[in-house]
Image 1: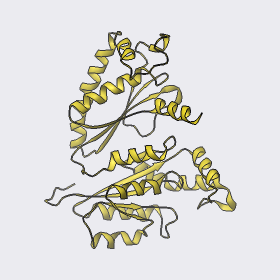
Image 2 (image 1 turned 180 degrees about the horizontal axis):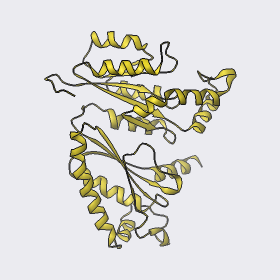
Image 3 (image 1 turned 90 degrees about the vertical axis):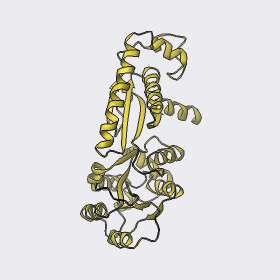
Image 4 (image 1 turned 90 degrees about the horizontal axis):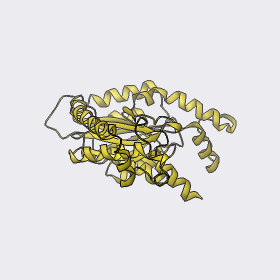
Length: 297
C-alpha cells in the first residue's frame, strides 16, 4: 500500500455463518472504539467512505440477509475500499463447525435465514457454501467452535485493538494431535519427539506451565536446542513478514495430548517473543478445553 502522510484508518468487514458470533464480534469492536454498522447495504459503503463523519475506525457487518448480498458485490466493495487513500481494510471471518452451529440454533430455537421449512442443517450448508470465497480471502479467521463469549472477546481484542499495523501481532498456541490440527495457523511444529512427562506418575496430572514439567522436558538434550532454534527462526522471520505487509501470524506447537511438551514449548516461545518486544498472545487449546469440561461438571 502506498504510504501517505495521513494516519491510516482501519476498516474491518465482519462476516461468517449465522450463529458463529458475528454480532458478538461487532459489539466487541464497538466497545473498542470502532464505529460499528451491522447489515449495511453494500451499495451504501462507498457513500459512507466518501462522506466520513468521524475519524474513528470502522466495523461493517456483512450478512447473507443483506438485501443486495452477493460475493461479486462484496468483492467489488472490497476493491473500492482498498482504493480509498488512508484506509486499511481487513476482512474478519467468524468460523464454526457445522455441528456446533446446528446445536446453537437448536438451543436458541432460532430460524436459520437460509433454511427452507425449518431444516436448519440445509440452511447452514447453503450459507457455508455461499461464504466459502470470503473465508478464503479472510485476513483474520477466528474459529468460535470452542470459544465462549469471553474468549471470543479476547480474540477480537487481540487482533483489532487500536494501534494500527505498525506492529505484527503473533499468536502462539499449543494443541493435541489426537484432536487434530488447529485451524487457520501459519506455522505448525511437532514436539512429539521430545521426552514425554506423561510417563512420569508425579508429573502426569500437571501441565507444561509447571516448572517441574518444564525441567523434566529440558533433561532431554534436544529440548533446549529445539527451543532456541525455533525462537531464532521465528524471530528471524517476523521482520520479513512485517515487511511483506502481514499483520497477523499464528504459530502452533503440538504434542500427543496437548498438556505437557507443546504447552512448555509454547510458553517458552511466547516469552522469548515478548522479551523481544513483539506483540504476542498465547492460548493452550487442550488446557482451555479441560477447564471448560471441569467447570461444567
